[in-house]
Image (cartoon, rainbow, N blue to C red; front, side):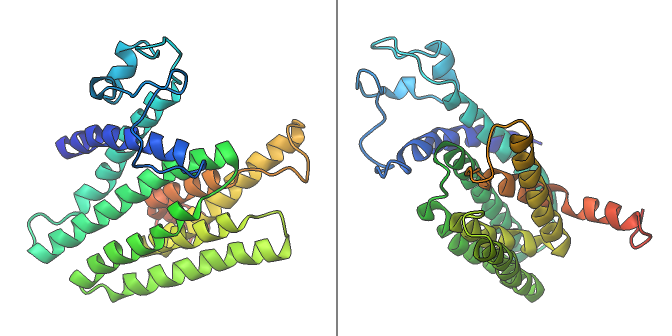
Length: 275
């Protein structure tokens, strides 16, 4: 629990940086320079006005220099990252075999870091997709390399070659399924979704086939229901572009956090698994 709280606090710092990424990447701007500044008066944000959550509350959501409102989305992203990191910690830290050898512990830590990374880019991609209906390659594509290096190393440290094979097949299967949909129905599925699907398939399948099945199915179902709701309430037409990335990510995280129990429960309904 202490580790989860500590990672949650660290998540607020990461969330502050994620706000920069969410704003600047779609605009094609550097995420490193220039320093953050007020969008209204242009004054550079002071270090003591850039403390996650705290500064926004102390400033009452306004710029210190010109009094322009600062969107509540900034502290919400920081809070969201904190909660996300704490949840990931609670999911993966208990599986780190503290009493075992160094290789097992290192493998557990690497898997924790991999899914913390996935949590961070999940927030970024979901919000960028909602804002501009785009999943930038500069964020999606590195997920393949990061996942392969961290999870691949973790699997090799403990000799779990099955996890390596599952991860590779998961990327191919889920990415291939989305590619097939994009080819069959041009315009119905963006290639950004296809690239993201492959990356999510890698992370999900590394955990197990049940996580992949639940994560993939949940993404399809949630995205489909959202699109159907928009059509029913006439908020969108058949040709309207709908951000699908957030639902893919939500489904994937359902598979990551609860894939095994959900799959076991579903199979038990047909007498195929333990109740």
